[in-house]
Length: 343
Image 1 (cartoon, rainbow, N blue to C red):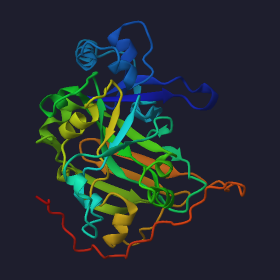
Image 2: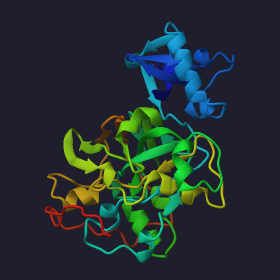
Image 3: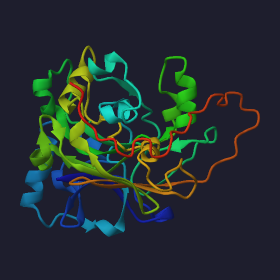
């Protein structure tokens, strides 16, 4: 199933958000399906019901095919999780971690899946306008796959981890590269360079639907990036993750908690950022500008699209400006690079 969060109407006539399920190109109201009398404003609210809520939706949809629905074309999709309790973003693709073979990752990367906490307060859905950070000149995207936690857990072993995943979605970790590189020279972060926006969507695809693509805890899916209709990545391979989603959940939950609605990002699929597109020699690859339309597509999941909004003028009194921005990579330096897992 594809679970989503949506609105109908526009402007003053727009409705509040609701949790829905996609069925034959229609969006069915999940609140009406489960019949608890309350309004479920997003997919997180559904998952927080407990008691196998995804199975309840599946069973109710089979028994009540005439449930209230609207055409998919008539709704506005929001992030399936409007405000995740936490967003943990990992970096599990060696191609990205090694800058496509042009640097050697720190040895700790090969010992454990590492992550940082991103901002759950600046979440956008598909087809949203993405704010351009005023303090940056190097705005970038990151093509990632995210999983959404469906049940609470602590100290979850990898062998049990997939039972805690409600489903998978696309995650775009919008990144101000100049801010990121400048502040991380201290050895902490990323932080402010990832603070402006994250996109999640277009929906959550339940784990059972993606089971045919799950191999050793990794999704064997083709990934693409387009900017203004031009490919900046054609053949990204989700299966090349060095660590599995089970590994990520084991690490995330150790001595901590995971809860329904938590989002765990995989980190950038190999080739899924602008600096990587430049190294691979994609014509026209450059940092983003206002008006750019960025599309991330992963087979069996969907397309996550965002349009870069106008860049606001930086307040001249703002003191914390970039001193050491990220240098641009040499165009085409990794044109012949082919990922091979390091043992």
